[in-house]
Structure formats: C-alpha cells, structure tokens
Length: 341
Image (tube, rainbow, N blue to C red):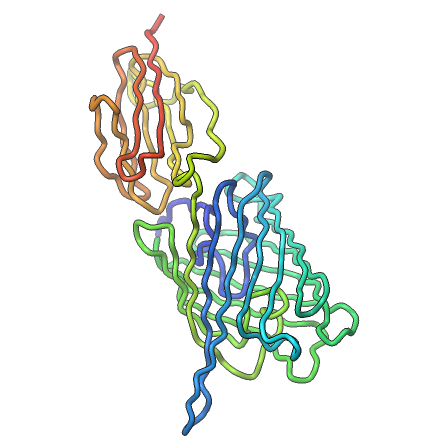
C-alpha cells in the first residue's frame, strides 16, 4: 500500500485517535472548529438519551503554535460545574513531516472546572500506514488533592487515503473511586475533495479536554466528531506568502530541467518562480482537494487534478506567466522565464 504524504494543516482524525491530539497544531492563518457529540442511553423502559457535546476552537500562530479552548456543554468532571471550559496553548517543536525523527507536542492550559493548570507532553511517529501515539499529562485534581499524573497511548492504522482505524487508552496513575481507565475507538474517515474529516467513535470518556479524556467512566458512550478547518486567506487574502525562488535543475529528460511546486494548505508552495527557458515545471497536489493551474491569459490550463496527482508544463518562451486555481481564485502564482545565456 502506498500512501501519499499527509499535511497537518487541519486537525484531521486520520492522524489521531478520538481522545488524543497527536501533537497537532494549526498552521498560521488557519482556524480550527471541531464538533464532538457523544451520548448514552439509560436502560429500558425509559431509554433516556443523555448528550455530551463538546467543541474545539483553535487558531494557528507563528512558530508552529496554536491557542484555543475545549468547551463541553455537559460535564461530570466537577459537580458544581454543569459544563466545562479548558483553555490551552500548544507548540510542535519537532515534526516528522519537516524532517524530525518524531512529532513532539507540548501543551499547557487552564481548566475552569478543576480550577487549576493542566499540561501534556505528546509523542507520535509514523511508520508506513501506522502512526503511534503516546502522552503524559499533568492534571489538577478536581477534588483539590495534589496534582494528578496521567499516561497513555494509542495508534492510527491507515486502510487507505480516506479511511483509518484508531484507538487509545489513558489513565490517571492514582485513580479515585469511580474513575476508570479511559479508552476510545474510532472509524476515522476523510471526506474526499474537502479538508473535513469525520470520526464515528465509542469511548467511556465524556469529554475531550485533557481533564475529561484522562478519566474514564463505567458507561460506554457513542458518537461522532466532525472537523472544520477554515483557511482565513481564502476569505481575507491574508496569511504568509511564500518567498520567491529560482528553479534548481533536476533530471526531467535529456535536455530539460525540472522545478517542482507543491500545492499545500490551499496555496502554491512557491508563489513566484524564476526559471530558464526550456525548464519543466511540475505542480504536485498535496492537498485533500482538487486544484487547477490556469494562466490568466489562457495560455495553459491543467484542468482539475486530484489529490496526490501532478501536472507538468515545459516553458520554452521567455516571459512572465501569471496563473491561478479556478476553484480557489485566491490562490495565485507567477512563473518568470528568462532566456538561456
């Protein structure tokens, strides 16, 4: 099985299990919104359904950092709080997709319900279709006892580009009466040609904050999670622009050089490229949605090419070629072709 490289542009459930973040951070200019709905039903004859909806709000900042909040509208963490807020900041100093040996995440936050600080150190490593996850957490005890320590781990197994199976376990080292080992299992689904993902899951943890996801109950809850990354550049034209670059010759044929532009996070990886006449330019689609490369003058048109696919064109005539993506007109690029000496 050959899997294309995955981007951490969104908090994709294809890269993590239901109760673990996997060290994810949003890139600069991306706002993340996740909706998690878990519920249980009481025995017959009442069969009353109790819902435990949770939300994640987060935004990407410079330096591979993210700030955000977890909010649960129904929480049993502390009796005096009917709901739960947990604010957090997370950094990813090491990332495997940037050449690091592992994905390393560091998180610090504050729980309003537990009235104290929380923190997490997460590790992850991808090996082929499998991504292994581990974490250690420092939690404020809701009953005003000394700080709790929780440890756990999980795994994600990719069955294809759009499907994965995932699971995890976590436990407070010194559990109190009524606290169980927390666990979750999920069928993780990517929605083709969109940046959204969906998880169909079961867990005995009622929430997804560091506090709630570390404390299992005796009840099994079922539900789903839907992830919605919002790229602000798409609506406001902001975000960091890639620097201009000059093509580095690579073997593309007996008489041509090759320049590669990766399309990722709804942007051409090199927005302004200078090349010599006769160079082949290849656009590689690393996004989960289809893109095009269309000259503003109509000189060339790639047509839609799908995730994981690429398109090439040889530029033989000197000049400046501006191009864009028809489905995403905020994506723009320029090729400057200079004559050979």
